[in-house]
Length: 360
Image (cartoon, rainbow, N blue to C red; front, side, top):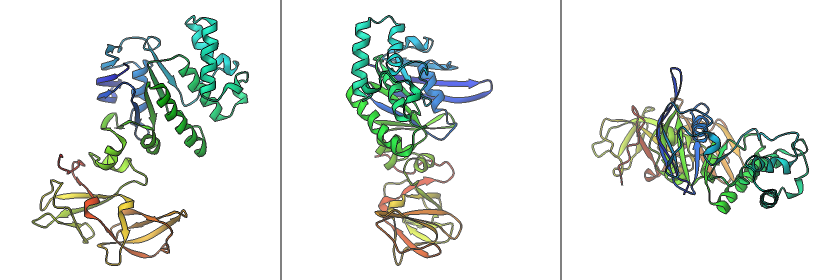
């Protein structure tokens, strides 16, 4: 059972601490995605798990075994890199078999495993080609195959699709997810693309500045973000935020910094009269209404055929995005009134950034 446990994990380069005490439990067979902006520490954390990066303090356990001081080659892991890292002078067959040859696997077993993995990844017709004769997607399949053929306890992926074009990324995303379902191994996948995270993961770990902001199932993070950062990072387009002050005794009204008043839910959140809060509304929950409570000046319109997006701003400059199903007659320069269902909103403490949602 290849579960992974990170306990108070820290990494520092001199005085610069880049991983700041991460605690995380990944169950056997889970597909876990580390996501966050560039520089958040997600690749460093992956390299610490792999053994390629030394741990400053804390522990790493794999299947209950403490591996913090164990060399990378003895941890039973396989890693797929962004750069493919194939041997250019070797054929695909030789790239796939090289790792098995190094551990003295019998030749007949190597031949069988290479053929099985090549067939699974649909590269069996490419076995005699060299990397320079392959497309980017084919090279990535070979890199994945080289990891699969070793039958590791855990697969580690470090932004493996970043070098591919948009259409191929979508295809490979589906292939990696299908591979996980076939093999059932624990997989950890690093990306800065939250769409990849949402579509592939069983669990997502959102990182920022070396700290774990939230860990959970994709829809739990989307529906119940624990702070402003997670709310703004998970979801595409990102959540809209509007600052204001609760001013009614029953907590049902919020006066925005623009002076406009909007309705708030009176239950489900621990807000109080006079408190400065940040209202979060996702683009698909905003809608044009003749007598809407808030007003934007539209600055740009995207017509995608089946959907359209309005990009505008409140009078204090706060930017809002509105998702409109279907097509729209709104154009740049129009003033549009917007409304929303109070039950769809999120509320955060403006000072701390933490959610004000009450625990269920």
